Amino acid sequence: MSDDLVKRLRVTCICDIYNTPCLAEEECRAAQEAADRIEELEAKLSESEALLAKAVEALGWVKFGGGPRGEGYHEFVCTILAELKGQDDV
Image 1 (tube, one colour):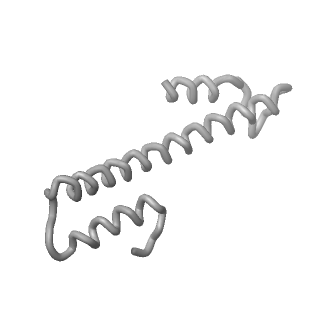
Image 2 (cartoon, helix red, strand yellow; image 1 turned 180 degrees about the vertical axis):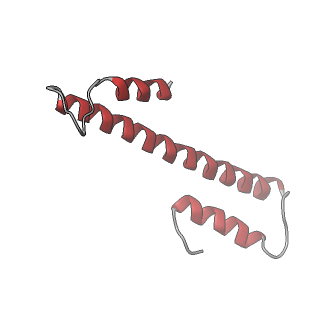
Image 3 (cartoon, one colour; image 1 turned 135 degrees about the horizontal axis):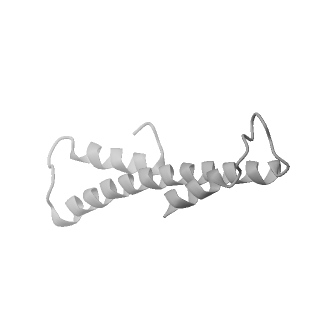
């Protein structure tokens, strides 16, 4: 659905906004910026979904006692939590 919306926003203006702007330049620029923002947010959402899947996996291991155990397990969980928080160092 959002791909369709982005496509419609991009073709709203039939002129080449950067080389031969039309009389609706402001509206064309706004449509292009909106399409760019939608794509940016979709990328962030996709990344967040991947991190959430890792968090759910880690929580499942903690709750049900499965998954890797012993050395490295604590570091694994800390790494996932750091990713969720957007931290580079653990």
